[in-house]
Length: 209
Image (cartoon, rainbow, N blue to C red; front, side, top):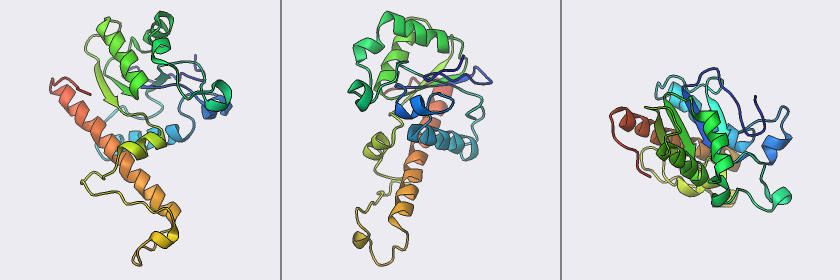
């Protein structure tokens, strides 16, 4: 059953594991995971994987989306943005996560440190389907993406401007347009990273990171 932290898919081939639901997920109608900017980023990455890298099965309606921690966390409500690692690794929480992804047959994409550690623990404990391939990437929140991705897919620096006056004369785009274009570049880099890991795993190379 779908909830604030979990969304079933039409298939059990692919799952995305995020960190935890937040304010956007709590206030959405209906409630569900990845409803705010993280959801927008996730959907963009899925579209890039499907349309640019010709990966099948990465349509949002097809995949399972869940979280390493099921409870809603955000500063004004719980005085924190994520659960502590020891809570994520608690037996009851790991059992909950295992029940949601144990039948995933092809790929599990763990986004962020809490997701990485919890999925790794389930893999180590033999709680995941034999042969499923694990992909690890950074947190999909915009703040984390902006912090971790500074160059585009071709290695060129992603240039930002804090004020319109800082733009060079040849730059005619608005600051909002520049920001949106830069996020697209960053999300393309993340999708490229996922695509590379998928290729390595299909070739039998263990993912590191």
